[in-house]
Image (cartoon, rainbow, N blue to C red; front, top):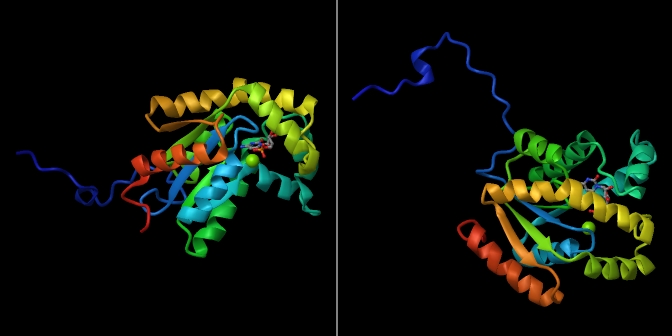
Length: 222
Ligand code: C5P
Ligand code: MG
């Protein structure tokens, strides 16, 4: 039987340079949460945080916080992208997420729901190669009529600059053109748990828990 060579057999050969993610998926669990605007991602993430001890990191919330930070060099840029429903250049969003994850990992947290991300293929590839490969993606599937109604309702109290009809239409368009290809990409890798998000929050959560158990069984409750 041929011997299997280990790198130690050639101690002087340079090792190929590897682009190693900052966090290892063997110790850190990343679940992406995708779905159109108003699909109910935030609502379901709150349930999962309460019941399973996930840390919830919303890319949109991190961007809004960065935009509001007085000394941010990206404030104006982020503002414009959000109002137009466009995807902020990924370097900004990936860096915000990596920093937020690092803070949480230092506090001992290991399970993350990354909500509203990745919304574009370049974000997906960059995050998985530089930050941490994902375990799977929840995809909250919801028709635009339902999401529109929810967003217009939310707009009465959310104070968000993009919960108005004009911005909502742009966000829908960005979702279909730019974000659905990310769902397709993970689907081809067998890493999507699709949830019917038209039902009541409780019914949707039941489906979420079933999906989670299937994917996460061995690691929940560690
Ligand atoms: O997820 P949420 O609806 O809070 O996102 C609000 C806006 O933040 C998006 O419409 C987009 O402009 C920006 N965003 C982004 N990249 C992400 C998430 C959000 O550019 N991954
Ligand atoms: Mg949200």
